[in-house]
Image (tube, rainbow, N blue to C red):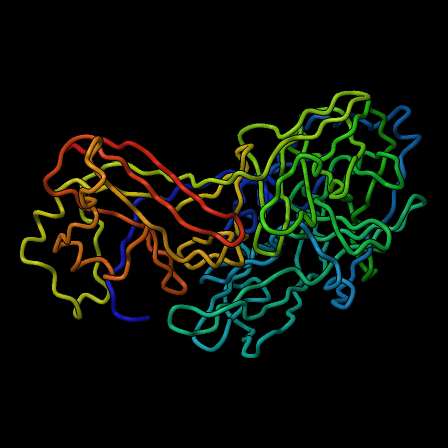
Length: 505
Protein backbone atom coordinates (compact mmCIF):
# COMPACT_ATOMS: atom_id res chain seq x y z
CA UNK A 1 0.00 0.00 0.00
CA UNK A 2 1.57 3.38 -1.02
CA UNK A 3 2.59 5.81 1.70
CA UNK A 4 -0.42 8.04 1.81
CA UNK A 5 -2.34 9.87 4.47
CA UNK A 6 -5.33 8.14 6.00
CA UNK A 7 -8.27 9.47 7.86
CA UNK A 8 -9.18 7.81 11.14
CA UNK A 9 -12.75 8.26 12.36
CA UNK A 10 -14.10 8.62 15.87
CA UNK A 11 -17.48 7.05 15.15
CA UNK A 12 -18.78 4.52 12.69
CA UNK A 13 -22.49 4.23 12.02
CA UNK A 14 -23.66 0.73 12.78
CA UNK A 15 -26.84 -0.99 11.95
CA UNK A 16 -28.92 -3.42 13.79
CA UNK A 17 -29.21 -6.83 11.92
CA UNK A 18 -29.90 -10.25 13.12
CA UNK A 19 -27.32 -12.01 11.57
CA UNK A 20 -25.68 -11.99 14.62
CA UNK A 21 -28.40 -12.91 11.71
CA UNK A 22 -27.87 -10.94 15.01
CA UNK A 23 -25.76 -12.08 12.71
CA UNK A 24 -30.66 -12.63 13.36
CA UNK A 25 -31.38 -9.14 14.01
CA UNK A 26 -30.97 -7.05 10.90
CA UNK A 27 -27.56 -6.02 11.61
CA UNK A 28 -26.12 -7.42 9.58
CA UNK A 29 -24.25 -7.07 11.97
CA UNK A 30 -21.95 -9.34 13.48
CA UNK A 31 -23.28 -12.32 15.38
CA UNK A 32 -20.13 -14.36 15.37
CA UNK A 33 -17.31 -12.22 16.70
CA UNK A 34 -14.26 -13.84 18.21
CA UNK A 35 -13.89 -12.77 21.79
CA UNK A 36 -17.63 -12.56 22.56
CA UNK A 37 -18.71 -14.44 25.66
CA UNK A 38 -19.86 -17.87 24.44
CA UNK A 39 -23.45 -18.75 25.17
CA UNK A 40 -24.13 -21.37 27.81
CA UNK A 41 -24.66 -24.52 25.76
CA UNK A 42 -26.78 -26.30 28.35
CA UNK A 43 -30.40 -25.43 27.70
CA UNK A 44 -33.34 -27.10 29.41
CA UNK A 45 -36.00 -24.63 28.25
CA UNK A 46 -36.16 -22.36 25.25
CA UNK A 47 -33.88 -19.35 25.02
CA UNK A 48 -31.47 -19.59 27.95
CA UNK A 49 -29.51 -16.34 28.05
CA UNK A 50 -25.74 -16.01 28.10
CA UNK A 51 -25.73 -15.56 31.85
CA UNK A 52 -27.50 -18.87 32.34
CA UNK A 53 -30.96 -17.50 33.15
CA UNK A 54 -33.97 -18.73 31.21
CA UNK A 55 -36.38 -16.56 29.30
CA UNK A 56 -39.46 -17.26 27.24
CA UNK A 57 -40.30 -15.89 23.83
CA UNK A 58 -43.57 -15.30 21.95
CA UNK A 59 -44.95 -18.68 20.97
CA UNK A 60 -43.17 -20.56 23.79
CA UNK A 61 -45.24 -22.39 26.35
CA UNK A 62 -44.78 -24.50 29.44
CA UNK A 63 -45.05 -27.97 27.95
CA UNK A 64 -43.64 -29.84 30.90
CA UNK A 65 -46.92 -31.78 31.12
CA UNK A 66 -50.33 -32.03 29.47
CA UNK A 67 -51.36 -32.60 25.87
CA UNK A 68 -48.17 -31.17 24.37
CA UNK A 69 -46.04 -33.77 26.11
CA UNK A 70 -48.26 -36.48 24.67
CA UNK A 71 -47.79 -35.06 21.17
CA UNK A 72 -44.06 -34.37 21.51
CA UNK A 73 -41.61 -36.02 19.11
CA UNK A 74 -38.01 -36.37 20.29
CA UNK A 75 -34.78 -37.66 18.77
CA UNK A 76 -31.17 -37.81 19.94
CA UNK A 77 -28.70 -35.50 18.25
CA UNK A 78 -25.83 -37.46 16.72
CA UNK A 79 -22.48 -35.74 16.07
CA UNK A 80 -20.81 -35.76 12.65
CA UNK A 81 -17.84 -33.95 11.11
CA UNK A 82 -18.32 -35.18 7.53
CA UNK A 83 -17.22 -32.11 5.60
CA UNK A 84 -18.40 -33.63 2.32
CA UNK A 85 -21.96 -33.37 3.62
CA UNK A 86 -21.68 -30.04 5.43
CA UNK A 87 -19.87 -28.19 2.64
CA UNK A 88 -22.77 -28.84 0.28
CA UNK A 89 -25.34 -27.18 2.58
CA UNK A 90 -25.81 -23.43 2.23
CA UNK A 91 -26.93 -21.30 5.17
CA UNK A 92 -28.43 -17.80 5.02
CA UNK A 93 -25.93 -16.24 7.42
CA UNK A 94 -22.23 -15.43 7.48
CA UNK A 95 -20.60 -18.67 8.60
CA UNK A 96 -16.99 -17.76 9.29
CA UNK A 97 -15.07 -15.33 11.45
CA UNK A 98 -11.74 -13.65 10.82
CA UNK A 99 -8.98 -14.46 13.28
CA UNK A 100 -7.76 -11.14 14.63
CA UNK A 101 -5.51 -12.10 17.53
CA UNK A 102 -8.50 -13.16 19.57
CA UNK A 103 -10.34 -16.28 20.69
CA UNK A 104 -12.28 -19.00 18.92
CA UNK A 105 -15.69 -18.71 20.55
CA UNK A 106 -16.19 -22.33 21.60
CA UNK A 107 -17.06 -23.16 25.23
CA UNK A 108 -13.85 -23.59 27.18
CA UNK A 109 -13.94 -24.66 30.83
CA UNK A 110 -10.46 -23.28 31.48
CA UNK A 111 -11.02 -19.84 29.94
CA UNK A 112 -14.47 -18.30 29.48
CA UNK A 113 -13.23 -16.30 26.49
CA UNK A 114 -12.91 -19.50 24.48
CA UNK A 115 -9.88 -21.12 22.88
CA UNK A 116 -7.04 -18.76 22.15
CA UNK A 117 -6.06 -18.18 18.52
CA UNK A 118 -3.94 -15.68 16.61
CA UNK A 119 -2.93 -14.84 13.07
CA UNK A 120 0.80 -14.39 12.49
CA UNK A 121 2.80 -13.83 9.30
CA UNK A 122 2.61 -17.08 7.36
CA UNK A 123 0.52 -19.06 9.85
CA UNK A 124 -2.35 -19.18 12.31
CA UNK A 125 -1.87 -20.53 15.83
CA UNK A 126 -4.48 -22.22 18.02
CA UNK A 127 -4.89 -23.44 21.57
CA UNK A 128 -6.79 -26.73 21.40
CA UNK A 129 -6.72 -27.91 25.04
CA UNK A 130 -7.92 -24.76 26.80
CA UNK A 131 -4.71 -23.85 28.66
CA UNK A 132 -4.22 -20.54 26.78
CA UNK A 133 -1.05 -21.85 25.15
CA UNK A 134 -0.63 -22.55 21.44
CA UNK A 135 -0.31 -26.22 20.45
CA UNK A 136 -1.43 -26.19 16.81
CA UNK A 137 0.02 -24.21 13.90
CA UNK A 138 -1.84 -23.82 10.59
CA UNK A 139 0.54 -23.23 7.71
CA UNK A 140 -1.33 -24.46 4.66
CA UNK A 141 -4.30 -22.83 2.94
CA UNK A 142 -6.76 -24.98 4.89
CA UNK A 143 -6.70 -27.27 7.90
CA UNK A 144 -9.31 -28.98 10.05
CA UNK A 145 -8.74 -28.81 13.81
CA UNK A 146 -10.55 -31.04 16.33
CA UNK A 147 -11.41 -29.86 19.84
CA UNK A 148 -12.86 -31.39 22.97
CA UNK A 149 -15.35 -29.01 24.53
CA UNK A 150 -16.77 -29.45 28.01
CA UNK A 151 -20.31 -28.45 28.89
CA UNK A 152 -21.45 -27.28 32.35
CA UNK A 153 -23.07 -30.67 33.01
CA UNK A 154 -19.58 -32.25 32.69
CA UNK A 155 -20.36 -33.85 29.34
CA UNK A 156 -17.43 -33.64 26.94
CA UNK A 157 -18.21 -33.39 23.25
CA UNK A 158 -16.28 -33.37 20.01
CA UNK A 159 -16.08 -30.26 17.88
CA UNK A 160 -14.20 -29.45 14.71
CA UNK A 161 -13.43 -26.19 12.95
CA UNK A 162 -12.01 -25.40 9.54
CA UNK A 163 -9.19 -22.84 9.56
CA UNK A 164 -8.42 -21.34 6.17
CA UNK A 165 -7.07 -18.32 4.28
CA UNK A 166 -9.95 -16.01 3.38
CA UNK A 167 -8.03 -13.11 1.84
CA UNK A 168 -4.99 -10.85 2.17
CA UNK A 169 -4.02 -8.23 4.75
CA UNK A 170 -2.76 -4.74 3.76
CA UNK A 171 0.75 -6.13 4.11
CA UNK A 172 -0.11 -8.91 1.64
CA UNK A 173 -0.06 -11.52 4.39
CA UNK A 174 -2.70 -14.27 4.57
CA UNK A 175 -5.95 -13.28 6.29
CA UNK A 176 -7.05 -16.25 8.41
CA UNK A 177 -10.62 -17.20 9.25
CA UNK A 178 -12.40 -20.14 10.86
CA UNK A 179 -15.83 -21.74 10.65
CA UNK A 180 -17.67 -24.72 12.13
CA UNK A 181 -16.87 -28.01 10.42
CA UNK A 182 -19.26 -30.30 12.30
CA UNK A 183 -23.00 -30.74 12.73
CA UNK A 184 -25.71 -32.76 14.47
CA UNK A 185 -28.24 -35.11 12.89
CA UNK A 186 -31.65 -35.95 14.36
CA UNK A 187 -33.81 -38.68 12.84
CA UNK A 188 -37.48 -38.33 13.82
CA UNK A 189 -40.70 -39.96 12.64
CA UNK A 190 -41.50 -36.67 10.89
CA UNK A 191 -38.23 -36.10 9.01
CA UNK A 192 -34.45 -36.16 9.33
CA UNK A 193 -32.87 -32.87 10.42
CA UNK A 194 -29.33 -31.49 10.25
CA UNK A 195 -28.48 -28.83 12.85
CA UNK A 196 -25.53 -26.52 12.20
CA UNK A 197 -23.82 -24.40 14.86
CA UNK A 198 -23.37 -21.33 12.67
CA UNK A 199 -22.32 -19.02 15.50
CA UNK A 200 -19.69 -21.53 16.74
CA UNK A 201 -20.58 -21.41 20.42
CA UNK A 202 -20.92 -25.18 20.84
CA UNK A 203 -24.70 -25.19 21.07
CA UNK A 204 -26.97 -26.14 18.16
CA UNK A 205 -30.26 -24.49 19.10
CA UNK A 206 -29.73 -20.71 19.04
CA UNK A 207 -32.74 -19.16 17.34
CA UNK A 208 -31.75 -17.03 14.39
CA UNK A 209 -28.05 -17.75 14.82
CA UNK A 210 -27.77 -21.47 14.10
CA UNK A 211 -29.20 -23.25 11.04
CA UNK A 212 -31.40 -26.26 10.30
CA UNK A 213 -31.64 -28.29 7.09
CA UNK A 214 -34.77 -30.41 6.67
CA UNK A 215 -34.72 -33.76 4.91
CA UNK A 216 -32.45 -33.90 1.88
CA UNK A 217 -32.51 -30.12 1.36
CA UNK A 218 -29.12 -28.54 0.68
CA UNK A 219 -30.45 -25.13 1.74
CA UNK A 220 -30.63 -24.56 5.49
CA UNK A 221 -32.90 -22.04 7.22
CA UNK A 222 -32.15 -20.14 10.43
CA UNK A 223 -32.96 -22.30 13.46
CA UNK A 224 -36.42 -21.23 14.59
CA UNK A 225 -38.86 -21.79 17.45
CA UNK A 226 -41.45 -22.72 14.81
CA UNK A 227 -40.57 -24.68 11.67
CA UNK A 228 -42.53 -25.95 8.69
CA UNK A 229 -42.16 -29.61 7.69
CA UNK A 230 -44.15 -31.08 4.80
CA UNK A 231 -46.75 -28.32 5.05
CA UNK A 232 -47.23 -28.61 8.81
CA UNK A 233 -45.90 -26.34 11.57
CA UNK A 234 -44.07 -27.53 14.69
CA UNK A 235 -42.65 -25.82 17.75
CA UNK A 236 -39.03 -26.91 18.08
CA UNK A 237 -36.23 -26.71 20.62
CA UNK A 238 -32.95 -28.37 21.49
CA UNK A 239 -32.88 -29.84 24.99
CA UNK A 240 -29.79 -30.92 26.87
CA UNK A 241 -29.76 -33.54 29.63
CA UNK A 242 -29.04 -32.08 33.06
CA UNK A 243 -27.63 -35.35 34.42
CA UNK A 244 -25.35 -37.70 32.52
CA UNK A 245 -24.91 -41.33 33.58
CA UNK A 246 -21.59 -43.17 33.58
CA UNK A 247 -22.87 -45.31 30.69
CA UNK A 248 -23.70 -42.20 28.69
CA UNK A 249 -20.23 -40.76 29.34
CA UNK A 250 -18.61 -43.91 27.92
CA UNK A 251 -20.60 -43.73 24.71
CA UNK A 252 -18.53 -41.62 22.26
CA UNK A 253 -21.65 -40.94 20.13
CA UNK A 254 -23.73 -39.66 23.04
CA UNK A 255 -24.18 -35.87 22.94
CA UNK A 256 -26.77 -35.42 25.68
CA UNK A 257 -28.85 -33.29 23.29
CA UNK A 258 -32.31 -33.97 21.91
CA UNK A 259 -34.38 -32.28 19.24
CA UNK A 260 -37.97 -31.86 20.42
CA UNK A 261 -40.93 -31.16 18.11
CA UNK A 262 -44.51 -30.37 19.14
CA UNK A 263 -47.32 -29.86 16.58
CA UNK A 264 -48.14 -26.15 16.37
CA UNK A 265 -51.51 -24.73 15.36
CA UNK A 266 -51.96 -21.05 14.57
CA UNK A 267 -53.98 -19.02 12.10
CA UNK A 268 -52.19 -18.50 8.80
CA UNK A 269 -52.17 -16.13 5.86
CA UNK A 270 -50.16 -15.71 2.69
CA UNK A 271 -47.16 -13.57 1.83
CA UNK A 272 -45.70 -12.86 -1.60
CA UNK A 273 -42.26 -11.27 -1.31
CA UNK A 274 -41.57 -11.02 -5.05
CA UNK A 275 -44.79 -9.73 -6.65
CA UNK A 276 -44.03 -6.08 -5.84
CA UNK A 277 -40.24 -6.38 -5.62
CA UNK A 278 -38.15 -4.28 -8.00
CA UNK A 279 -34.79 -5.95 -7.35
CA UNK A 280 -31.26 -4.76 -7.96
CA UNK A 281 -29.64 -6.36 -10.99
CA UNK A 282 -30.63 -10.03 -10.82
CA UNK A 283 -33.36 -11.71 -8.76
CA UNK A 284 -33.79 -12.77 -5.14
CA UNK A 285 -32.22 -16.20 -4.64
CA UNK A 286 -33.17 -16.62 -0.97
CA UNK A 287 -35.48 -14.64 1.33
CA UNK A 288 -35.65 -15.01 5.13
CA UNK A 289 -38.17 -13.24 7.36
CA UNK A 290 -38.69 -13.29 11.12
CA UNK A 291 -41.61 -12.91 13.51
CA UNK A 292 -40.56 -11.69 16.94
CA UNK A 293 -37.08 -12.64 18.06
CA UNK A 294 -37.18 -16.42 17.73
CA UNK A 295 -39.28 -17.38 14.69
CA UNK A 296 -37.67 -17.43 11.23
CA UNK A 297 -38.88 -18.66 7.87
CA UNK A 298 -37.24 -19.01 4.48
CA UNK A 299 -40.04 -17.92 2.16
CA UNK A 300 -40.65 -18.58 -1.51
CA UNK A 301 -38.78 -16.47 -4.05
CA UNK A 302 -41.31 -17.47 -6.71
CA UNK A 303 -44.75 -16.51 -5.36
CA UNK A 304 -47.18 -17.00 -2.46
CA UNK A 305 -46.13 -18.67 0.77
CA UNK A 306 -48.23 -19.67 3.80
CA UNK A 307 -47.04 -18.48 7.23
CA UNK A 308 -48.53 -17.98 10.71
CA UNK A 309 -50.12 -14.57 11.27
CA UNK A 310 -48.07 -11.70 12.68
CA UNK A 311 -45.62 -8.90 11.88
CA UNK A 312 -42.57 -9.95 9.87
CA UNK A 313 -39.21 -8.28 9.35
CA UNK A 314 -36.88 -8.93 6.44
CA UNK A 315 -33.83 -10.71 7.84
CA UNK A 316 -31.97 -11.33 4.61
CA UNK A 317 -32.69 -11.35 0.91
CA UNK A 318 -29.77 -12.76 -1.05
CA UNK A 319 -29.46 -11.62 -4.66
CA UNK A 320 -25.82 -12.60 -5.20
CA UNK A 321 -23.19 -13.77 -2.67
CA UNK A 322 -22.31 -10.09 -2.22
CA UNK A 323 -25.65 -8.31 -2.64
CA UNK A 324 -28.04 -8.75 0.30
CA UNK A 325 -30.90 -6.78 1.85
CA UNK A 326 -32.32 -6.46 5.38
CA UNK A 327 -34.66 -4.32 7.51
CA UNK A 328 -34.59 -3.45 11.17
CA UNK A 329 -36.74 -0.44 12.08
CA UNK A 330 -40.15 -1.51 10.82
CA UNK A 331 -41.83 -4.75 9.71
CA UNK A 332 -41.88 -5.32 5.97
CA UNK A 333 -45.27 -7.09 6.14
CA UNK A 334 -48.12 -7.98 8.48
CA UNK A 335 -49.78 -11.32 7.72
CA UNK A 336 -53.49 -11.55 8.59
CA UNK A 337 -55.58 -14.71 8.78
CA UNK A 338 -56.84 -15.82 5.38
CA UNK A 339 -55.37 -12.79 3.56
CA UNK A 340 -52.43 -12.28 1.17
CA UNK A 341 -49.88 -9.48 1.56
CA UNK A 342 -47.29 -8.44 -1.05
CA UNK A 343 -44.94 -5.70 0.25
CA UNK A 344 -43.45 -3.12 -2.12
CA UNK A 345 -39.66 -2.91 -1.91
CA UNK A 346 -36.56 -2.59 -4.07
CA UNK A 347 -36.05 0.22 -6.62
CA UNK A 348 -35.77 3.15 -6.68
CA UNK A 349 -32.53 2.99 -4.70
CA UNK A 350 -30.80 5.86 -2.96
CA UNK A 351 -27.81 6.72 -0.81
CA UNK A 352 -28.15 7.39 2.90
CA UNK A 353 -25.19 9.18 4.50
CA UNK A 354 -24.63 10.55 7.98
CA UNK A 355 -23.04 13.93 7.18
CA UNK A 356 -22.44 16.71 9.70
CA UNK A 357 -20.21 19.67 10.62
CA UNK A 358 -17.51 19.30 13.26
CA UNK A 359 -14.12 20.80 14.06
CA UNK A 360 -11.12 18.95 12.67
CA UNK A 361 -9.74 18.05 16.08
CA UNK A 362 -6.91 15.52 16.28
CA UNK A 363 -8.34 12.83 13.99
CA UNK A 364 -5.82 13.39 11.21
CA UNK A 365 -3.01 10.83 11.30
CA UNK A 366 -0.15 10.47 8.83
CA UNK A 367 0.91 6.86 8.11
CA UNK A 368 3.84 6.40 8.26
CA UNK A 369 4.63 9.72 9.99
CA UNK A 370 8.23 9.89 8.78
CA UNK A 371 7.41 10.02 5.08
CA UNK A 372 5.01 12.99 4.89
CA UNK A 373 5.59 16.57 5.98
CA UNK A 374 2.48 18.41 7.28
CA UNK A 375 1.82 22.02 6.24
CA UNK A 376 3.22 24.75 8.46
CA UNK A 377 -0.23 26.07 9.35
CA UNK A 378 -1.59 22.67 10.29
CA UNK A 379 -2.94 23.89 13.66
CA UNK A 380 -5.24 26.36 11.91
CA UNK A 381 -6.78 23.59 9.84
CA UNK A 382 -7.20 21.27 12.76
CA UNK A 383 -9.36 23.91 14.43
CA UNK A 384 -11.48 24.88 11.41
CA UNK A 385 -14.90 23.27 10.82
CA UNK A 386 -15.09 20.19 8.61
CA UNK A 387 -17.89 18.51 6.71
CA UNK A 388 -17.56 14.91 7.89
CA UNK A 389 -19.33 11.74 6.84
CA UNK A 390 -19.82 8.17 7.90
CA UNK A 391 -19.79 5.25 5.48
CA UNK A 392 -22.69 5.42 2.99
CA UNK A 393 -25.60 3.00 2.90
CA UNK A 394 -27.69 1.93 -0.08
CA UNK A 395 -31.43 1.88 0.69
CA UNK A 396 -34.45 0.64 -1.22
CA UNK A 397 -37.92 2.17 -1.54
CA UNK A 398 -39.20 0.48 1.64
CA UNK A 399 -36.14 1.61 3.59
CA UNK A 400 -34.43 -1.79 3.41
CA UNK A 401 -30.64 -1.69 3.41
CA UNK A 402 -28.56 -3.38 0.71
CA UNK A 403 -25.26 -4.56 2.12
CA UNK A 404 -22.32 -6.90 1.65
CA UNK A 405 -21.82 -9.67 4.27
CA UNK A 406 -18.83 -9.76 6.58
CA UNK A 407 -16.57 -11.76 4.31
CA UNK A 408 -16.39 -8.78 1.91
CA UNK A 409 -15.53 -6.17 4.53
CA UNK A 410 -12.09 -4.58 4.69
CA UNK A 411 -10.18 -4.38 7.96
CA UNK A 412 -11.98 -1.16 8.81
CA UNK A 413 -15.30 -3.01 8.61
CA UNK A 414 -16.42 -1.36 5.35
CA UNK A 415 -17.91 -2.86 2.19
CA UNK A 416 -20.49 -1.86 -0.41
CA UNK A 417 -22.89 -4.29 -1.99
CA UNK A 418 -21.55 -3.24 -5.41
CA UNK A 419 -17.80 -3.77 -5.55
CA UNK A 420 -17.72 -1.78 -8.82
CA UNK A 421 -18.41 1.46 -6.95
CA UNK A 422 -14.99 2.77 -5.98
CA UNK A 423 -15.61 6.52 -5.66
CA UNK A 424 -18.33 9.12 -5.26
CA UNK A 425 -18.65 12.64 -6.67
CA UNK A 426 -19.08 15.25 -3.92
CA UNK A 427 -20.32 18.83 -4.38
CA UNK A 428 -20.40 21.25 -1.41
CA UNK A 429 -21.79 24.74 -2.18
CA UNK A 430 -23.15 27.63 -0.12
CA UNK A 431 -26.95 27.51 -0.13
CA UNK A 432 -28.22 29.80 -2.89
CA UNK A 433 -24.83 30.13 -4.59
CA UNK A 434 -24.85 30.55 -8.40
CA UNK A 435 -24.47 27.28 -10.29
CA UNK A 436 -21.24 28.54 -11.88
CA UNK A 437 -19.45 28.99 -8.54
CA UNK A 438 -16.71 26.50 -7.82
CA UNK A 439 -17.70 24.06 -5.01
CA UNK A 440 -16.11 24.72 -1.62
CA UNK A 441 -14.55 21.25 -1.63
CA UNK A 442 -12.80 21.87 -4.98
CA UNK A 443 -11.16 25.25 -4.41
CA UNK A 444 -7.66 23.90 -3.98
CA UNK A 445 -7.27 24.27 -0.23
CA UNK A 446 -3.56 23.47 0.30
CA UNK A 447 -4.34 21.69 3.55
CA UNK A 448 -6.61 19.27 1.70
CA UNK A 449 -4.04 18.78 -1.03
CA UNK A 450 -1.36 17.84 1.46
CA UNK A 451 -3.38 15.54 3.69
CA UNK A 452 -5.86 13.74 1.42
CA UNK A 453 -5.07 11.69 -1.66
CA UNK A 454 -4.95 14.02 -4.66
CA UNK A 455 -7.02 11.64 -6.78
CA UNK A 456 -9.68 11.43 -4.10
CA UNK A 457 -12.36 13.39 -5.94
CA UNK A 458 -15.28 11.59 -4.32
CA UNK A 459 -16.75 10.63 -1.01
CA UNK A 460 -14.55 7.59 -0.65
CA UNK A 461 -11.62 6.21 -2.55
CA UNK A 462 -11.02 2.47 -2.46
CA UNK A 463 -7.41 1.74 -1.71
CA UNK A 464 -7.51 -2.03 -1.34
CA UNK A 465 -8.37 -3.26 1.21
CA UNK A 466 -9.45 0.06 2.75
CA UNK A 467 -12.28 2.51 2.20
CA UNK A 468 -11.37 6.04 3.32
CA UNK A 469 -14.25 8.27 4.32
CA UNK A 470 -14.59 11.79 2.97
CA UNK A 471 -14.06 14.96 5.01
CA UNK A 472 -13.66 18.51 3.80
CA UNK A 473 -12.26 21.55 5.70
CA UNK A 474 -14.34 24.75 5.35
CA UNK A 475 -11.83 27.47 6.22
CA UNK A 476 -13.66 30.73 5.52
CA UNK A 477 -17.34 30.19 4.75
CA UNK A 478 -19.89 30.15 7.57
CA UNK A 479 -23.55 29.42 6.96
CA UNK A 480 -25.66 26.72 5.36
CA UNK A 481 -24.09 24.57 2.65
CA UNK A 482 -25.73 22.05 0.34
CA UNK A 483 -23.91 18.70 0.48
CA UNK A 484 -24.54 16.55 -2.62
CA UNK A 485 -23.18 13.10 -3.44
CA UNK A 486 -23.62 11.06 -6.63
CA UNK A 487 -22.35 7.77 -8.02
CA UNK A 488 -23.29 5.26 -10.70
CA UNK A 489 -23.70 1.58 -9.89
CA UNK A 490 -24.01 -1.30 -12.32
CA UNK A 491 -26.16 -3.07 -9.71
CA UNK A 492 -28.32 -0.25 -8.36
CA UNK A 493 -28.25 2.38 -11.10
CA UNK A 494 -27.70 6.08 -10.37
CA UNK A 495 -27.51 6.84 -6.65
CA UNK A 496 -27.66 10.26 -5.01
CA UNK A 497 -27.86 12.00 -1.65
CA UNK A 498 -28.47 15.64 -0.68
CA UNK A 499 -28.49 17.41 2.68
CA UNK A 500 -28.27 20.96 4.02
CA UNK A 501 -25.60 21.36 6.72
CA UNK A 502 -24.91 24.48 8.79
CA UNK A 503 -21.21 25.33 9.03
CA UNK A 504 -20.37 26.94 12.37
CA UNK A 505 -17.30 27.40 14.52
